[in-house]
Image (cartoon, rainbow, N blue to C red):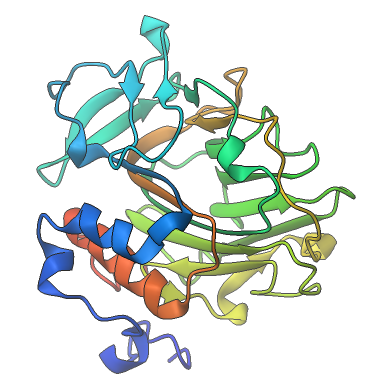
Length: 288
């Protein structure tokens, strides 16, 4: 048993930091996100809120479900548009390995931000190459950026970020513990206030609402460094590939929530479990 996490063999009480209410399970999902995030909400993409596209048709614009984001995700080229699909009988956005959506404008909402939480529900196909699920900037290897990537073992999915002095911090759950072929609600709390080098400091990692212990993470060698600068507003958010179309993702995306604040463990658990409920993802489903 992994202490404090409650994987296979762990107790429900050891996992349930947040409380799942009837509102979380119902159509009050968007209200819940708004209530928890408050004025710090940057974007809430929710595939189940897409009402103007039929299942099987392609998507030109994916708008913020709560109307907070000053821009939207868009794709004008027909062959590069993702399509609306069904996953467990619920609408989801399907990326087929040649699709990309990018914000129509730079993300001014992230300008100068040092505290940020990213929660994303996705289901990805196995890949021997690194693919981009979400990336802030044309290539996060430039300063003050981040990327959520998938790749072959040992780092099947991870979030990496980089600060102004080009120090990397990259963390992801181990494939020996987590089944990367399963749908997941992947949460990351970003602390860019120089919290020190180490695990769960600059990037605190959650899977299906529960903190991933240090021993269950793959750390990218010496690259788990302290982050000490805010993001800049000269970059776009790209969904499904790099801005130039490289490293395309094959899989499905159900939701993306970004909040300009470090969520508490309880807040992360509550939102994550509400997202999980929308796609019938169980707490232990991600485990091997």
